[in-house]
Image (cartoon, rainbow, N blue to C red; front, side, top):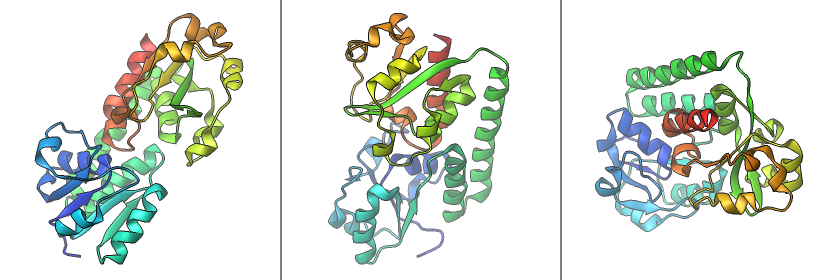
Length: 258
């Protein structure tokens, strides 16, 4: 691999946003179809993948010297790219510490260590300030729904952001489970936990609050009774990168304020 790499393909959106924030966007030659931050990326960079599928021939045609991927869900793509002779780096961050480490690691990969350290440091400072402001205040109990059929609760970085913002995740033990299938929850469990606020982000599908409110037995849930069902757009909260630490956190704060 050439160092620093000059032709990078990003198969998930968080590395795209990070490279733009570092001023290293000219290195990007291909992106995921889900990349929407910053908005200009959709007109500037060719799309070469979905999330669990990719056009390997199109990626090879771009002659990248580095491909950036994320999670075990892209393991099959990674294997195909490695067999095709490409250099691949697979990130696997599932919490805030991992997101900050991803930013710093990506900065090192492209020779922008100082800018990456400054960026990560600015996020750490903001998170500390938000957590300090929430300290000692009453906490709303929050149910975060990542998917509706089956119902899947929030992953670790989402639970951490809820806590930092001043909420209390009703399923903290599930948030540590990396696989979505291990975070499936029963409707009765949510009803019994009786959250004050329901946050939903259905991974690329529009949330329908009325559908949530109409679930059997949910009319008695405090959040439903008080009409506190809030959608957070998935690009803001379900990508483990800068968006979650900035606009995603802001969306949680706004929902908690009501």
